[in-house]
Length: 70
Image 1 (cartoon, rainbow, N blue to C red):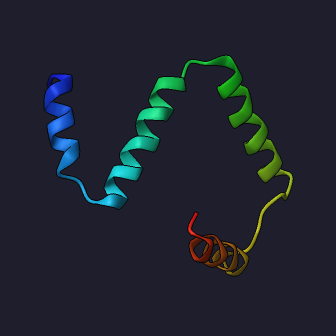
Image 2: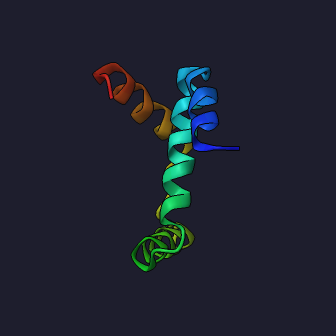
Image 3: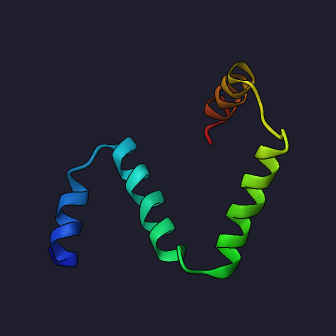
């Protein structure tokens, strides 16, 4: 599939799918970048060490962000 075909298909996506695709493509573009890989490792290690939030806390943060327009 060509880039032009991908662009045409992307225009047909809804907002949520467009956002998901953008995040995925950004990930693909950075997947071999040593700094990006190191940041993923740092985040993983922090979560493994207990740096997490509960689902209810996530929902509160998410609601505040949506309300602020982010």
